[in-house]
Image 1: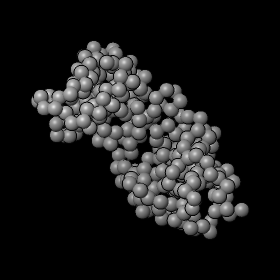
Image 2: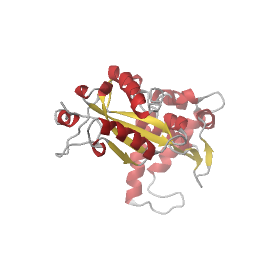
Image 3: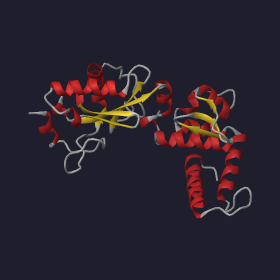
Image 4: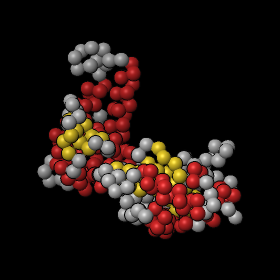
Length: 264
């Protein structure tokens, strides 16, 4: 059975890039037991390290919707990877345009699970960055060991920075709020800037570790309380009325802070 024939039979949840003519996804979730064999197969096809370059919750949950993989943009370009993957697809007698796509910082690949189309397909997202080590930290997720998502972790880190008068971005690291001048992209330095000298990057392992550190740092609890109070006001710090859209945005932020910290 050809790969394209198998596609029509595999319409399950998973990545959203590859769809059939009816708009249904051609990919499915991948079980934890299938991830390592699939990554090993991808290494052979892509000529890239994959098994130690996964992002987010890949390999940390019972199943994953896709395979996010960091790629060092200093060593290979998106076009070069597209050419490599397209060559493999062509060897299978298929159209590369149906299997390889580009968007933003990523190259997407319609990947046979364990390298065998009979097992179905998962979407692999090769994500390019000149600092892949930072990308792995910025997109880290604790997986099933936490009740929160990696997105929750980043939102809480951003709120901690805001409470302290700084900004945090999973792409830019810790930066100055007033002019976005970089402060640090070293997780250990960021930990000390946020929580004090006795902390290191382990504080960022999950929302739970962040919650524990926040509540053990009285200065930070007070900073959060002030931030929540300021956000709840209907006027700006200069006394001018806030726009309805800004009030709604601030209310959403207060709800998020309360959900993730319990601080009101």
